[in-house]
Image (cartoon, rainbow, N blue to C red):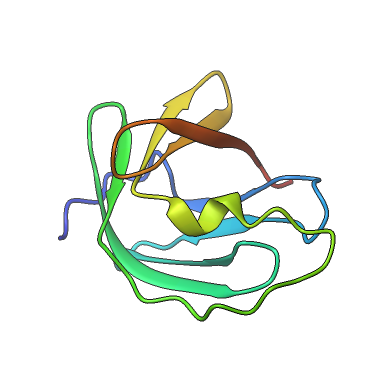
Length: 99
């Protein structure tokens, strides 16, 4: 994966418990947390947002944290937010650009 044009670059987060976060950098790496476990992968920007390569994640359970972001496979950028979908294309959540 490689194509990076800069539209998704930066930090995207949710105010939900655990503060789910994804950080997209110019090298094509995406890092973050589902609120409990670390996410590290590669991504490729698309016309709509980005595709995220499959990744391995630890399976630590955190009380009171919905770990939905661990299922991220793609994001769609629209109106200053990232809509997060799983590998089946089902929307699982939303992140906003972190100031």
